[in-house]
Length: 241
Ligand code: 0O2
Image (tube, rainbow, N blue to C red; front, side):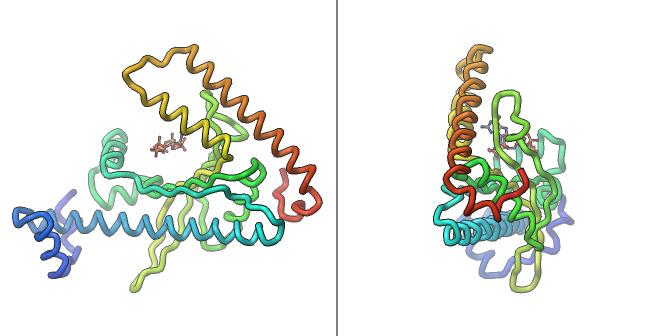
């Protein structure tokens, strides 16, 4: 990080003392300022995750009151860890600074919404898009257009305001919406792909793709069943698809 970027960060005497207590006296004022700026940015991303989680919880609550079932099975949020942030900045040749993290990365805050049925993915995405404080920066529909390996999910990059004591900040976050079946496939695929000590053969990749297609078939059949059971009640809420 360049010196001038953190010069204006004021760290209170109490916080400086606390940081020194934790890490010892050897940290320079500059290091403390940089650490503080980074921690502050991470806490803004945490707030953005809370805002987005709440939005989905509200939609889930409203839907379950109206239709007596929950479109959201679970929500998982994560902050990208500092090492992954650094790696992504280096791979993309972005300058290493707190300001550059905020400017260049969209996925420091990540929210994964695991839905009951495929239709719920789109229903929730549409409901979120209608909210006037949310800006959709990018949308990638890997359900309609799965990745070559079989990965399916709906990705949204959004900007959401967070309201602090003195200011309003707009933070970006990545939302992944997927069904339980898509999530279970992605999580197992991730585990297998990251077993670096083994070669991942073409046969294995084909088998994984077949599993993805099988679970998509399961999703589609369950969604068709949902339509038969709930169609009349849920139709007013459905997006046109
Ligand atoms: P992590 O640890 O989950 O954050 P970008 O994020 O824009 O640099 P890209 O590839 O354009 O990169 O973004 P994309 O396609 O929207 O994918 C971003 C995230 O989606 C990934 O984040 C994964 O979480 C998930 N994802 C994408 N493709 C796959 C896949 O084939 N398998 C699985 N299991 N997950 C996938 P990260 O940063 O890779 O990891």
